[in-house]
Length: 285
Image (cartoon, rainbow, N blue to C red; front, side, top):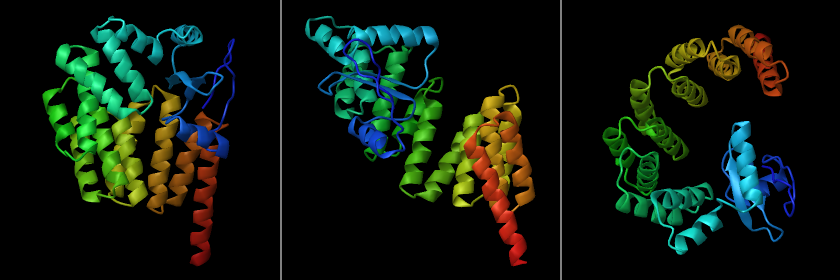
């Protein structure tokens, strides 16, 4: 998490895995990294940037935030003055969603869906997905499947399945998680993210490892033209092999990740873990 410095902004950079960074991460309901949070001198949030942006778009956002333009408060002020449109309502809803103020996000997404019912609009699709996600978390287990079946061309269909499998994983509903992964992979058989997510999770719960290995190797092949992404997927392949006690193959595989990203300490730690497992096995024989 990082705050930006310009005029009356203070720039501070924190690691969300460390105590103070984690404290702010939770205090401001942050999600994922990188996460740029902008607050005023009193600690009130002005705006935030979640994830990576292209340089030009990033600079425009920074300038807007410095001028307190196109922020939540700016949109709310314009809305209250009568500047009511699908764009303004969607912007307010998304700002609340970013802050995890879900009740307020629901309020404005509901207004958007009710007053501007345009199924081809990206805002409309996002609003429908958010509301379906809320219904799912609130106990309607069919809400996201219903969303997918009624919006097959939506860019949020994959996210719908990812949200379901994460929910079932966190609530330890393994059978439902596995059946949902099966549905997801039938719909997205060539999506490297879906294949990789499934394989890593199978390694975590030590289940379906042969199938996981087949799926992750398919993902590795699909990402051949994107080495940076491929390195992370190769790491999953190595993890699956390690879980299968195929230590030599796991070591050889993680070395491929290291050759792509030699400075990555995580890959080095993975290799050390695999070597130690191999050594422990040889000593127990």
